[in-house]
Image 1 (cartoon, one colour):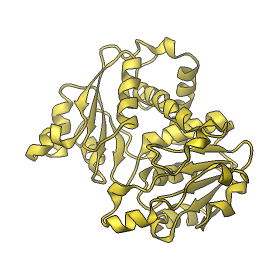
Image 2 (cartoon, rainbow, N blue to C red; image 1 turned 120 degrees about the vertical axis):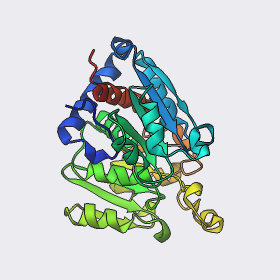
Image 3 (cartoon, rainbow, N blue to C red; image 1 turned 180 degrees about the vertical axis):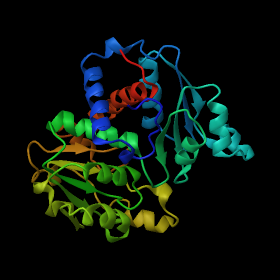
Image 4 (cartoon, rainbow, N blue to C red; image 1 turned 90 degrees about the vertical axis):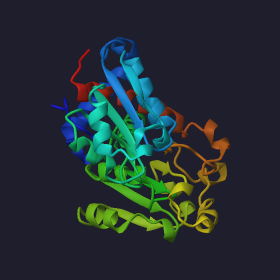
Length: 308
């Protein structure tokens, strides 16, 4: 069903396809050694026009653990983009060498342009402040694995909700499940864009509220999704400096949280989660990073149409 498809935004996947990927990821988590040769002879191209640690390396680790090979670049400066080559021409060329590509680009829509220019599956590894569907798959797998469900819970999303592509993708994805309540925590300047609150939440009668103080809502949450204030998305450094420490989770703030709440973060962390929280059993962000590799293994398998 998924063979040959590209993944540009979370809603490119039907709920049935999403289930397929998450169920396969569960099997890989349980028995990773059974999947070590399934992509032998296949090549993944990682086309990263923007810096990345987790996303790029988790894609590469995923393909290597499946027995495939990797090629690519980790900045625009080391590609022919520096000479003015278009995204469409780059992907047509890469398709001569690779079977599947993962692309991160600072411009919204660039991975979609790439997908339209080739028959090779293209995976959006993040495009500007727009979408980050594989981080969303990671988040969904983590929540489902640790909470046992993807419905009927309250999630607090805190920090930079304006520029955070992980936030936009996650809200889109979770809005498809029943009885998920959103608590959106941010300063006025970093609120979720209106198109998200209007088109996704209001239009679908989804329960949500916007607040400025995390302490006021901590006790309501089943999941706390923290994000960093992203310096690279600001045009004005003074605004970044003023807002960067708006929300810092420490043990004192967690004193009013539920015992079984989980804390997620797409990483990298700057200082929005105190390192003292790392030892708390509710801290799940490094588990989340590992789930990211497993879900990308499942996604690569499905888009390539390979089986165990």
